[in-house]
Length: 87
Image 1 (tube, rainbow, N blue to C red):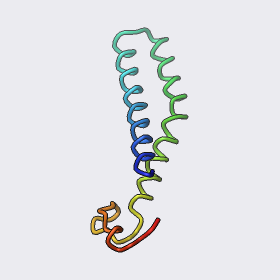
Image 2 (cartoon, rainbow, N blue to C red):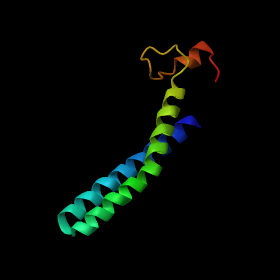
Image 3 (cartoon, rainbow, N blue to C red):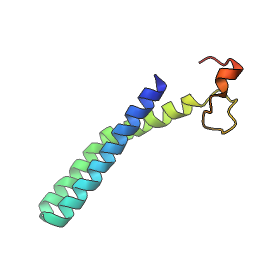
């Protein structure tokens, strides 16, 4: 379950950043100053989605590798299966 949440939150964060970047590039190259200002304003509103998505991705990532037995800390290498650690 944590890996699905982590992947979903990371995917949402990636798509939001990609949308920010592409909308900025398109508006800067092909539109008026008013449109550029509107796009930048909407990017600020988009932070309402981006910040929680990144926090969830970070929190779920830390929870996935918390048994302490991993040889590649802080990442999980599956050692918890051998040690019998339960979540």
